[in-house]
Image 1 (cartoon, rainbow, N blue to C red):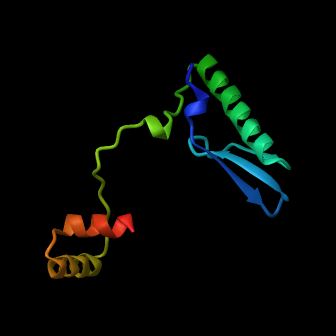
Image 2 (cartoon, helix red, strand yellow):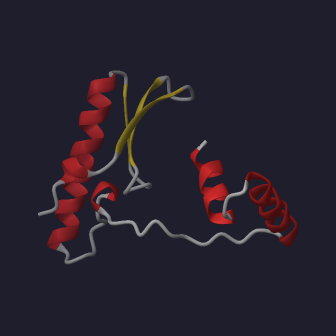
Image 3 (tube, rainbow, N blue to C red):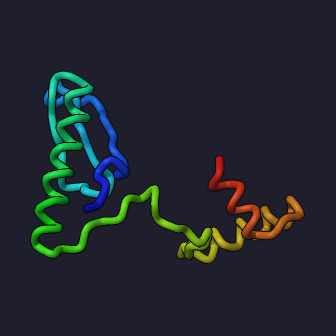
Length: 108
């Protein structure tokens, strides 16, 4: 069984509901409302646990926890040619590669 405690949980305040909203990043369609913050976290964790158990019982593909995924450090982004030119010029002014320049910009 997948360890549901390794998923990425988030608790936020819902102004519309006037309660805490428990969310799980790996299961974006699930949520749990409660007036108590700790109970909202416990509620979403239990909900995810039940859903994972159902998925396992039905032989469905279960999402891998984001924290356990391996990332290559590479991804492609399509941008307009004008922006590409602008960034290349800024990188040249800074005397760094375009890759390093964009990486630094993203880190800010």
